[in-house]
Length: 194
Image 1 (cartoon, rainbow, N blue to C red):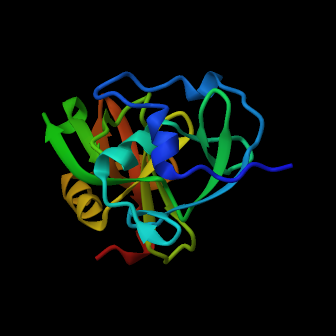
Image 2: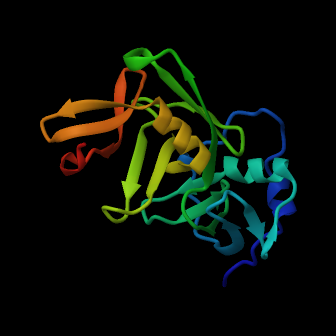
């Protein structure tokens, strides 16, 4: 017999506290509890029963117990419950990028809509996915576990302005440096040189 999904306030009551370290959701293995009517839209808005969750503290709390498993589904996980939720694209939205330094010595610091801050590098790679060769890019920064943040359009434009070209055996590449690592934003089409 399946449980009824808890009310968000009930679930939140299990994890109160400000500025606590993130719970060890990767180590928790509760049985699957069912589906919760919680949805994260591509624009970063969290909705419960179709209504936006207005309390940012509640959204941050849910984000702290969010996990993506190898089955590609997203779950809110506690030591005793595991509720599947729906995510349109990525659960977070990168809304700011700050560049410190330049060239190979540059560090790119990303901030999400929920206040997470990461520096692009080996532990937090930046990736750009093109669904079709001429399609619009979907750029992501790794946040934690299997969780990514989609870069907002404004952040991606700013990132492109910080970018530069480099030659590779496969041709020219356009991208950005952070923590000594080059992240490609896309190959340059050699046939369109002026």
